Image (cartoon, rainbow, N blue to C red):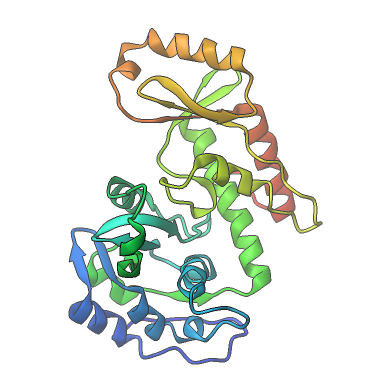
Length: 282
């Protein structure tokens, strides 16, 4: 049976067996990914389907899209996408942390590969919202979920950011003070088809438990070995890194977009988060 835990929310969830039944009836499973219509999922996770106050019918789908991906914590990574003719207009991943240790890269790869840039205005009524799980169907019988309170959600975002920074620092390589790593995901669960500048600016909107605001992350992106966008990094350092990369044939042969970060800024921010959240360094 599927199991679930709740926080202070006293509303009952629907029967756990409904998830697999709904997947069989309405969803798709392919390899290690399963999806079902978000409208059906909101009936399964009943507390999240309650009407939102002060919201119009027009804004309701977008609000539920954000609410579901950010306020439900699960042991299996999931994403919520808005799609037109099975092409992805936008998507948001759940906030996984050092405590969950879940790998959401499969979701990013699948959804970003199907992303589109625009939808004809007259076709926007045909947009559908989907819920994806990074799991084969039989693993969903061991799904656990928890509805986060506002305070828990704030901490979850900070934990997710700390987890993301640590991964980049552990997996990236250095050229002077620049940290280079493949662009496989963005902080705070943002989809790869979101403008990266918006995603990195969102970091600066988060605050620590003592209410100190975090800085926006400095970044740059190399696509096909060319600098395509960035903010806050020194141009001289970027050009030096680009020349060094050009001399490395193994890197030049790859079409993988590279994310460039400020190593010192990432290290200092991670240390700040670890102290604020009382995380232990491994």
